[in-house]
Length: 303
Ligand SMILES: Cc1cc2nc3c(=O)[nH]c(=O)nc-3n(C[C@H](O)[C@H](O)[C@H](O)COP(=O)(O)OP(=O)(O)OC[C@H]3O[C@@H](n4cnc5c(N)ncnc54)[C@H](O)[C@@H]3O)c2cc1C
Image 1 (cartoon, rainbow, N blue to C red):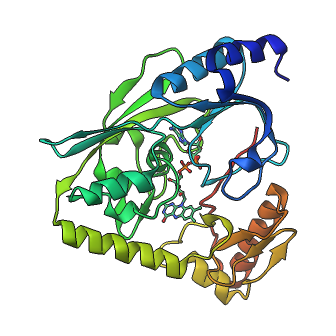
Image 2: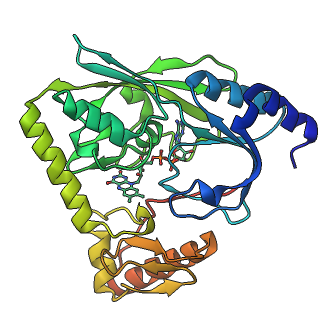
């Protein structure tokens, strides 16, 4: 439990950008998650670093999130300090075709601005939910593009050291993964710089429209965390789930989408417990029918 003196220290520093006992479901795109003891709305990389240092100095656990588009938060909430990253400044380095952004910038907005300048390299991300920080940590990708391919360098921070710039190799990127995935309670990505390339404005705009339309056609509407499972080697998770006859399967408020079987939809009062039970049911059934183990793409957050 957070003490009054600890709350006061945060309020003195961050004023009304601190909330006490706030339900995380309000911030999660899928509408799931119990209360955080303290929630800090970080508006700059300084805020990010100071919130972490303050939590550490007060002996409180902390965690940073971006758009909360890839995490399932626990029904009983999170203890300590949850930092929501809204640090969004952007600087374009025209001669070098580089763009440097604070990690709370929405990747959709960065991708769209880059396309509008005629800069290629992030066009695939025009419909990707979440922040730049979350995309780096997850090595997010779509339509053959991947964040690690455009990353020039990133600024990272952990308690006890100053923020420092690291090269892409440092992240040990793999498919939808980096060494920081699930480590948002120890490390922060505070900023990232991307190396883009000069493209044809008309071509990039047309590609952006094509990708947006493809998302519109394939992704179901409603409250979802996107693809539930990683695609297994040489196959598609959605295809296997559909072939197992699991479209429309339901646990509590969560249902396997009838539109695209790799998406779970919260139809109302779905809980983290419902989601996990449905996930296990699908994993077991697909394994029983096809001998394939589906691996979760969603990070299931626990204390
Ligand atoms: C409808 C939908 C469609 C999607 N489509 C795709 C897709 O096509 N391709 C794809 O790859 N993903 C997709 N996703 C998943 C998601 O959008 C990406 O994984 C996204 O990059 C997550 O970013 P976020 O800011 O929301 O991260 P969050 O969900 O907030 O956090 C994810 C993890 O990163 C950590 N983290 C976040 N920010 C930081 C930071 N600054 N420093 C350190 N750690 C941090 C968190 O602690 C957590 O462990 C989709 C999701 C949805 C809902």
